[in-house]
Image (cartoon, rainbow, N blue to C red; front, side):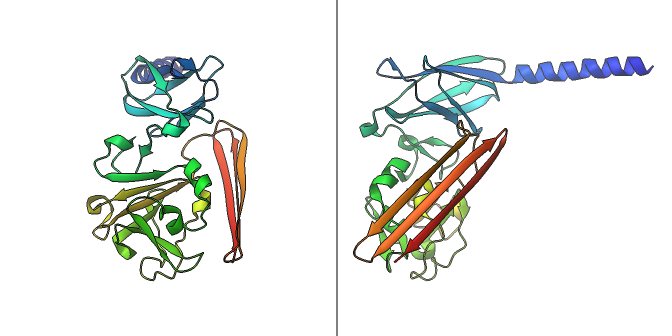
Length: 281
């Protein structure tokens, strides 16, 4: 009787595993630019938190992908970035080619403050995306000054350490400040001489949605939304065992000295991150 139960349990587990395998799909693809294979790119699916690096022939593969519609994002430090929409069916093998755009074209960027993850050119509201490359070029120590050089954006400047973004002349609690999609609970919304409690030097990407966003972020977000994305919470598994950055800034007008550093380490399926900023004026 016990042997019969074990056999039935084994058959049940086999059926469940086969059904699970049939419910998922596989994505195989290539990364190229103008027909040339790219060998130093990373490919990620943000919706699922998956990331992989391409092989020497520019190919990549994702196995066990749940059925649905996704956006594949490819990025190369030499050739730029690109994205491609795909649909994964149960038990299917989906083939795709990601065509990268040159760095000076700045390709197609993904915007997350809108519902789901879409390309910037398909967003239903006016958006501004500041990438990690832009942040290195701007070199500002406050969030307001970092965004003040973008069209339709300015800042409430109360010194080198206190500056909040203004969207089309509106500020305060009319502009919702988010960090990784969660609202910030600082005093900068009620008192402009307080600093925003998020550091732009630690950001991976800053996204701005101009115009009313009250349906998504509450009745006070009539001016727009600023979403700062950083690596405080890992959204996918890094491809490298250890990675990080170290940066220093200086200003002669206010005798400013700013230093920032970050470290990310992967141990199996666990990701440990740490970062810090020091600023003196």
